Image (cartoon, rainbow, N blue to C red):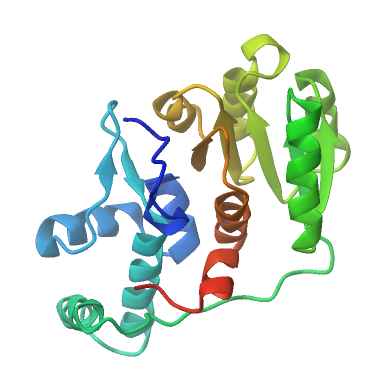
Length: 227
């Protein structure tokens, strides 16, 4: 799959693994797959390696269904309501959650310039970013001051990002956003990443991805609704 979608908006790009979606919407992956087969309304893209990849609007659709289930509807009724809401062009609503006073994000980047740009946008959103430029420093940072989210350039330290991603996932449930100049989405997901973004990364999409994995969306907050 080509992850450089060009004109597509951030909510249209399939970047989230089903494991990430399971944690984001609090619905078991098996249930999400079952709904896909039964109702066919929220159907993810498939990567070349066969992985399910969800766009952010699909995450919001699943959140909509979850809210209706919590309100007492059955899955079939919730999906019918979702279909009617989409057909009418109505907003799906939101469930933004409050952030803690200090949300630490570890930026493991090989490019100091790219790291500074990412740091700027994260600080603008109120996060506390920490930059490291090689895997050895990233490993120490994960132990000394564990972050709430990890952003890892897969080409860091001569291409050691995939191994670091895999090792991190084996030790920690921390959300992982993998980035790369190469189309490495399948490898990233297989190594435990929750989302993959291909460089050059759109700043709005980057911030929205971070907020989605942590529980809130910059894209939805800025746009107001999904259409």
